[in-house]
Length: 558
Image (cartoon, rainbow, N blue to C red; front, side, top):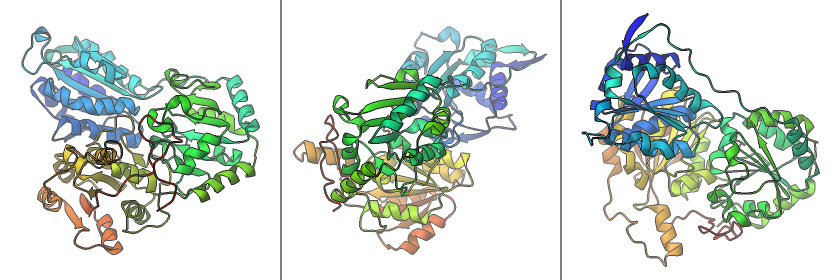
């Protein structure tokens, strides 16, 4: 039997879960935990500059590995600062364990210094949360947090530990075994047979894949299924890396910023096989007018998603890799020439807005150039704004966990700290973060964290001196009243990032493919600064609240 404090017990349990990197910031209510963490020989701590940055660094690690990652924050402002990263993880189903310090138990509810109801505040933005009342509880709560974060549909779990619980001494015989994810639900053979029959009978099927396919690591078998059935594949924003960009069956992202021909093809399909998607409004537009004539097979590991927003013909509860594995042998090989030909005709009539060639003439062409000059294993992150949609439309993805973006919450400030986390989790890979001048400012303090750990991150900064997507919507839907979306001061990002110790490549001064190639080959933090015009728009676009057939732009590729 060994005596230890609650803080020491927490650190030992994290070590047993295989945790090697934690991001966070210490404060008064979690100092015992940090004191114990300082003696760990296994866990490296990444000192972020803001708790939101710490949360997103952990997200970068979790999104890259698919395994739960850990972040720390103190009570009060530490907890309130990190909630955005937790909420973002909830909407995008990212396995995260966030451990917050809390004021001592006797002071809870007294408005003590740096006290906030972290437990209550985190209920709607977590998969589960705990307020630990004794050190003994940690022996069950910490492993349970990891089991819950990783089981079924992944998500964030918060563990709030009062300071006195961290300092409480307990005697421990044996630490519990590391938690593992629960086995996924068993897929019904009847459902598989019904789904196979529906696909085989369909004349115009479309396979629609999302982040759930990435989480299930089902990209390879997804491609096999599509090729066997000759099913065109469309993706949500979260599923863009499932099928290689240039694959003949890839018809691109659907929804608000889809190519016109993609949304038109969806209107014409008679069967949607929706896997790991949640029918969110950015993808479906006005949901009750979304593909009204199509039958729907919806596959998801979360039963709450089935029939949530769209009644389906067949709902299949299960792990998507497992479902595809059982479905594939029952799928008939069909060329579906008429359907594929119809989509080709749509594509000819309404050419893709995304570029087929790279260059410097537009942000989209430049993004394609960066992709062509990068290794296929490169991890791509984005912030949120025009650059996010340009990247979604133009980057030549090749597959796997290559694409990390804030899909559900749409959080500006996401890209840089997530890129740092990805680089820490995969130090052998290049990480490129596409950002905008509006987004980069929202977590700019983590530029220092990147230099401190010399992570191999390149930020491509599109600078249009405004909040681009807001500006675009004001132009299109508010009679050009661009109020509070333009920055009157032109910041010198080149000087600022040099000041943080970053390598810098300023394409405003000199612009060539060789310069970009050299910048991408630079090891460690590097900025590529690219000024763009405010007039560069993200098109096509479905107006908010409209059906996907109502599109602005995209009738030509000009």
